[in-house]
Image 1 (cartoon, chains in turn yellow, green):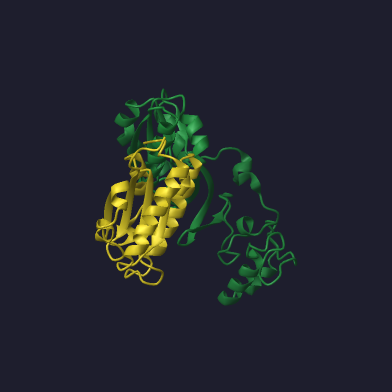
Image 2 (image 1 turned 90 degrees about the horizontal axis):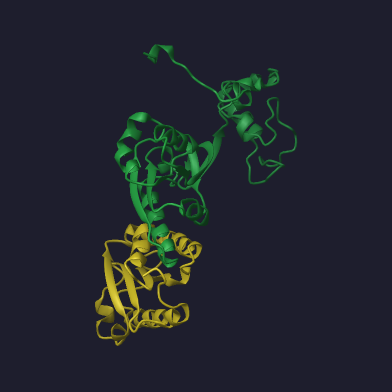
Length: 133
Length: 222
């Protein structure tokens, strides 16, 4: 049975996303969202993502700058590779890699950000809560 | 460096299942460089295993530690207290590291977390290639620094075989023809005459075929 409020951890590059994008949206009423700021999404490591699940997240989202817009050139490419690897690790331990996703986003894309959270909540209804939480 | 890769998590999980407290011991030299057994890999594996066991409703204590080298007693001793606190050691060292740890701590089971694959180099970021078989009788001077024993699929000492095409091996087109590379390199060095030398059949007694090898440096033995 799904908990009342799914827990979502968002790792985000400070140049691509800020929590204010979601602050006036009703999605925050339907999910317990934790934000982790990164100076660049390239700072993400496999272990940070896994530890978010250890800390009880039902889903983890990584927001990065769009292709070609990372000011550190390849941070978002590195983040994508690490997310893919961690997703396969989650599948390997049967936690379901679909709990982890990465999106390119822009500071102005409020609608996109809200849509992504809504879609994640819908996805969680199908996957269920984190069985290792 | 020694190149290795992590075993599948299911295999690791099965091997550590009989124990409640496990030390995941990384090695900070070769296998760290190939992203298989350094601090980051220890932390990632520990986290993945904690999640995997928790999902199964089982609590397991995992201690994380990485020492500089698992193949030298001086560094292994740093792990002695941590080893003593646990029921088993999951070593992310190469096969030599696993065995050295097992030798130093006789009463603690030491389990391998990696498959040791080859002696190689970092060709480019994320790509490791095999360069040496450790045959014990290095002939690289004749071959322009390119080892046909390791890099020619047919291990030809008097190549090329004639089957390569566009610099690629006929056995597998993903493999560069070692003999093409040897010829190109000897040409660049002005040593093409090396190709006229007949290389006699290799004496494999110096290799592992002669049994486990030992090197004694009397000048260092006290």
